[in-house]
Length: 351
Ligand code: NAD
Image (tube, rainbow, N blue to C red; front, side, top):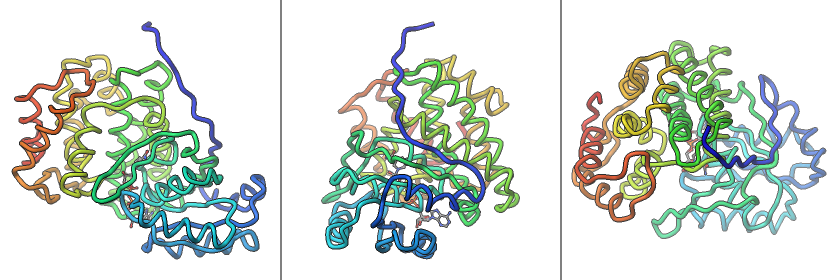
């Protein structure tokens, strides 16, 4: 066995169906008396429901979370935090809402309780990406990590099938890269393999019936494990490329991950044989790259970056950005290989 470093992120996790009923007790356990509930405009009704559940300990709702955590939105939320003497945060939603809670916590160290409604996994990480003047800057701090996460399967039933699929593949991407990162360790690799198996097992059931409780439970469990992977070890080529593409062309987050992942895996295939065996085992396929492509495509995901709004010149531009700032990856970054990876993801061809 190779030597390794393992970082455990503290945090309390409550998992199951109907677990949101535990929220008032969790608010009380943290000693919070003036809680601000956060959501996106689309999920404002979730926030209102939560505020009702918390009762007198709720000080209001801020339902204006946006994708990519714009600093301008955080500043408006900070004004509400100050005006209402807020002493704790509850976030209900996907990575965008969690991002807002984290941005406020970074500035105030307020405790956070997060109830995730997608499979993005942000709730398990001490990482925050914020956008200002069109630039997304990522940082990590123990303040950013939520104190309590309540996974309630019931909150995920409304996530549309298309979004469930891409969000689930986004989670699989965390686990896949955790298997071949330079910081891989045996514990995280175990979680990563279980995460991929749970998500690959759950997503087809969700596509057949979005209210299939067993499939939803499996997927959310996989998302939790994948989130731990993302929060514990560094990522590699796939995440960097998606970050670059998202920043350059404002592409949708989970959809971009879905289109790129099979090609990033194909690129790394021969450089990370042990990780590839783990992915293949978890997915019950022979080839991880085609297995991932077939899973996503068969569940109706868009597989071409072109269809997500990336311009064709983006192939050369994103390759140039990647090569100008090379980072660690199991297979070193090579001009021709990266270019052809991006060209395949642009066209959405099967790897
Ligand atoms: P999202 O949070 O942007 O959600 C997309 C839309 O779907 C929103 O309008 C949301 O309100 C709605 N929605 C979410 N759950 C729903 C549900 N159950 N029912 C109905 N509608 C629902 O999407 P996301 O993919 O979860 O998050 C993406 C963002 O999270 C990106 O900004 C990404 O960078 C960030 N992220 C950060 C980390 C991290 O560790 N820092 C990890 C993953 C993602």
